[in-house]
Length: 261
Length: 345
Image 1 (cartoon, one colour):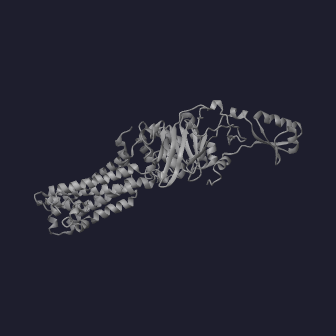
Image 2 (cartoon, chains in turn brown, blue; image 1 turned 45 degrees about the vertical axis):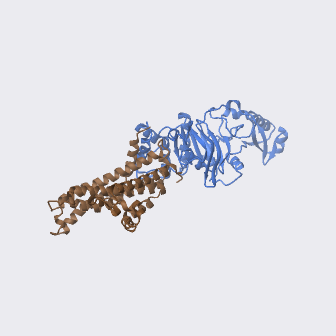
Image 3 (cartoon, rainbow over the protein chains, first blue to last red; image 1 turned 180 degrees about the vertical axis):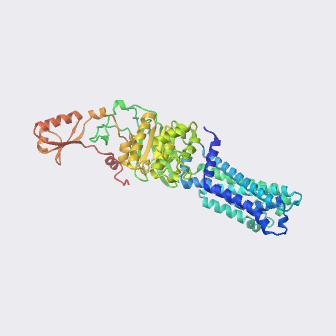
């Protein structure tokens, strides 16, 4: 048997040899540079111009992460559904590799992409923040320095994106429709706050097991407990269960289903 | 080659073959007789065995209780009208869809329980050969080469040469014609030198020259590399030219297995219905004393040498002989007979 890494290599080629992927990465880099520049040029002597490098960086990333999530979801959705719509799945699955390993290689390449896109974003946002920030001393946020806060915030945003991508990946391999996968995951991404508000765990006890309540881990940076006294540990546990569920469904369905596309 | 005959589990096809009139259309008469030719009754271990394979989706049975052995070193045809279950069977053979009942062994390994080992012996195109359009032909082949051990650059180049894609291999697949994609599909299936090559309607979209080439290199693969080729089609004339044997399937059931090609010597000794086209059929009939009248000639059973002798007698008796033809039924006639003439499109 050849190496499993060659499967991941294959999947990476499928991602990076498409123009689309580079356009996405370019847009991410562009947005990451654009916002620090906008903050700089649109504020004359106001508070924004006094923002420190890391504050600038953090705000830029908060905005850019929306786009990053969308792009990662697009890649996740296409990863399996694309093979079905191209018809290439038939040639892919008749190799001496089990379906679970093929799916795993796809998932790993997706995670690698999400790491790359986040790294690109951070790099450009940091560079631009260095150039366009005039404020010197960064204020502290809670008990953290601005740098620590920015990093924690990025981590939380990445986590959220990670879960959203897993959802997209699942929908993609269950329904084999990338449009549905993209739509559904983005819908959840944009409406989670609304759902979290409607199904407030303070009002409904069961609502604390909903995924929406826990997607935003950023709230734990400055406070130990969330609504209805849920803790970071509890949120992570709930998310982990959902994550495991998404992947389990994806694997079971992908492994069992008849390929008659 | 003699070794191509294996005793079928269900149907033992006995036949007397005779070479047909055309040097190109090598069609042999097949009759269900009682005796098996002794030198043909050799039992060979099949490359693939389908054992009571059934596929049901909901209440619909697509393939029912199909048992079939594919003997090694042949081009084995899989023939049936549209919707007969050809592609469904092929999908089960390559593990794309589950087998509802029964099992399929490839080189002795179950595709159900030992998928990875079984499929390693198989190269296939299932329906259209879809490729990554945003990659070049070469990059596509590299994809598949990476997934199997021991396929290096030389092998890739060799296969590209075999299918005649050297000129365009570094172009993106989206610029390929259907025929070129078909060639790339064959290349992809051959990369790892599979023991069993499964091709689902491989001549779809190929031009006559492409079909001819495909036929030639399938034949070459079979004789030179010993690859067994399992090829499905609904095109009868094509199957006649391409295959050593055909299995005929209809409504998900195996109807018959037929040998198409046999050796010339065996053909020479058996007699076959022959038409003598003559100017005076009545006189010819009286002279020979057997046979029956037909438009512009007489028809009788005769062996190879006998035909020559009869001809000499006719000519000697002053009867003009315009033509001598064997009246073997074509595969199409037999196919229609077997499948009850239901539409083959």
